[in-house]
Every structure is written in structure tokens, then in C-alpha cells.
Image (tube, rainbow, N blue to C red; front, side, top):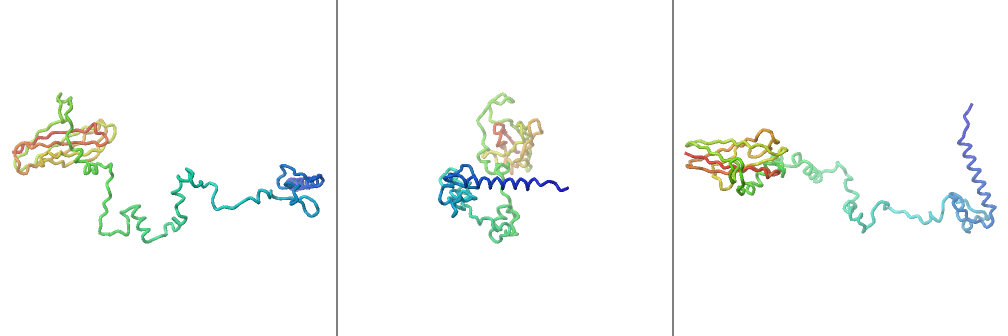
Length: 270
């Protein structure tokens, strides 16, 4: 047994109801408009809505509305010129529609610029005899050492030191000696006091004797608080000089300058 076709029955009912409404409209005197009747008669009293037999036309659309429609290439969501939204997205709207049309298939100068901007080291158009040296990060300790040494390697004002119970510029003082023709070495261990791994760089002030030099750990990263100290090796090469040679070592933590430390080193050159 075939199932009953409810869809077909519903379609017949809708068609019958539509015909009944049309006949009712034809019987009305004066052919007055019926509000809310979409897809049927709109303002049937208008002469333009009457056919040759004097019957109202069955309109599919409201001609009053559709006749006023206009097409436009501008999408509705584009901001109007002069509005704050327009100024905000003006740079994006000024991008030509041809931008990026060739995708990754373009070549020549465009490809060279693209390769250089993405990774200069892999630029196939560069001279193969050249060695690529990446730029240092401004937050790198080596960069800080080279750029800020003249500014930071300066002794501070005297302050109270709880270890010596005196006012001094130094956190500690060291004395070493160098025999004739020898090079003296000293390792200073700087304890970490910050809560994070901090960058550091160190060196001698401009008025230190030129015999002093930091030969190990001139820059790097310290351990956190309670971690192992940072050993800084200092080398003194008198190079024929005699007497007491003095150097002032500055240990700088650029992100935690309150913990900078300063040391006085006296080398007795014989």
C-alpha cells in the first residue's frame, strides 16, 4: 500500500485558498486595497492594477518597492567617507585589488625583496662569498655591553655598606700581585639576588689602569636567587708597569639596576 501523499494534499489546499481569495477580491465593490496581502493584489484600486476585463491583476511583487531598487557595487558594510570608521580602515581600503594576485608565483625583484624580508640568510640573490651576520637583539647582553659600556661603567655615589660598616662606592675590594713578566688573574663570584634569570654585562671604568681586562663572563645571564654565583674572571697584564695598578670593575644588571655591584681591584706589579 502506497503511503498517503500529504505534501500533494497541502499544495492543493493552498491553491484552492488562493483561488477563493481572488474570487472574493473580484466581488468587492470599488476594488479597495487589502492590507497585508503579500504576493497578491497591492492597492487594487489603482488603474495600473486593473486588467482589460476590469479585474485586478495578481502581482507577484510589490511594484512600488521593486521599482525603487537600485544596484550598487559598494557593499552595505563599507563605512561612509568622512566617518570615523572610514578613517580607521582607510589604509586597508586604499590597497589595490591587484595586490597579491600573482601569489607566490612572482619572480625577479619582488622575489628578492620577499626573501630578504623573510630571512636575509637564505636570500638566494645575495653574494655567496659574503657571510651573514644577524643583528643583535637590543635586549641581548652583548649588545648592551657594546652600546652602554661608556654610560654604565661609572662608579656610583658612596653608600652605606653593611659588610664593612662604612660608606663606600664599592661592594668589595680585592688585592692581588703580579710577578715580573707574569699575568695575574682573579675570579670574582657575584651572587644572584633577583627572582628571575637576569642579563648582565661587566667591565672597567675609563679611569681604570689599561692592564685590567675581563677575560671570562663579560656578559651573559645570571642564575635566580639562591642559585650558583656568576664567576667573572679578571686578568691583569702589567706589560712592564710597576707599582700599584688599580681597576674599578662594574657589574651591571640592566633590568635590575638596584642590584648592580662595583669592585675595587689593586694589583701590586713587581
